[in-house]
Image (cartoon, rainbow, N blue to C red; front, side, top):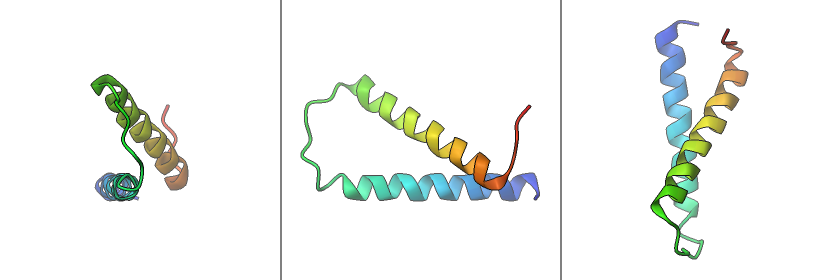
Length: 62
């Protein structure tokens, strides 16, 4: 699979998953969260999604 196509698929999957999470957050009651906590949550979510996409596409980094 070409590198550009793989990158496009990754971006679309990450955007879709983050959009799903954001759309469900309207139901949750917001609690006071420090800015760095929200930043850690976003970075952690991105890394988990990126790992899952790598496994899904069968790409192994060395």
